Length: 205
Image 1 (tube, rainbow, N blue to C red):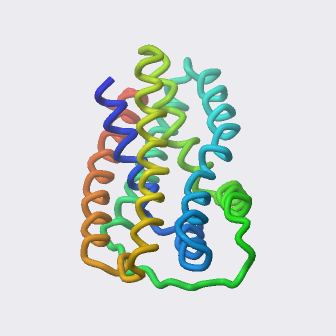
Image 2 (cartoon, rainbow, N blue to C red; image 1 turned 180 degrees about the horizontal axis):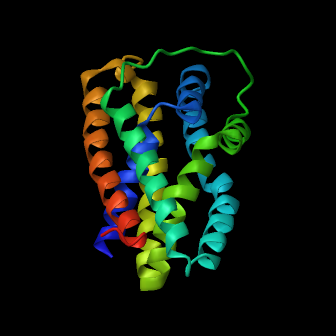
């Protein structure tokens, strides 16, 4: 269970702190309409991700006997995580742009996350395979991963909303850059584990 808890925390914090459309919306809503608006945007993945998770888990459960397919999915997940880690390692200060729009924060967060390719790529190649393995172990492992992932994902974006609400300089600070580089190193290690799992499923190891 500890493995699934750790994976959820690392992947969730990485997704929460990494620059992307949803993070930019969290920042812009915080600076334009206040911290509460940024927090509402941060909560949107809880709403949008459920159908994606359900569809991808059901698909992979139907493919559970096809080790070759699952091996390819695991290798693709390793590449996705490795690229995410690389992007985190080379993170730069984030430029803040403030669009003047009405504060429909949660609705804009849901739309932004639902139309972004990132959740689909993550759950197809990384998240759903981990959830499928956790279900084979038991409901405790399943809840450990899904709970720690969303706690850290949403929590990271709420932390950023509060930090940006107090200081616009936070996204360009050394602390933010060091957080991203630490997450990048952890993601690189996690990508190697996914590569190993993919090669094992393909019978190479």
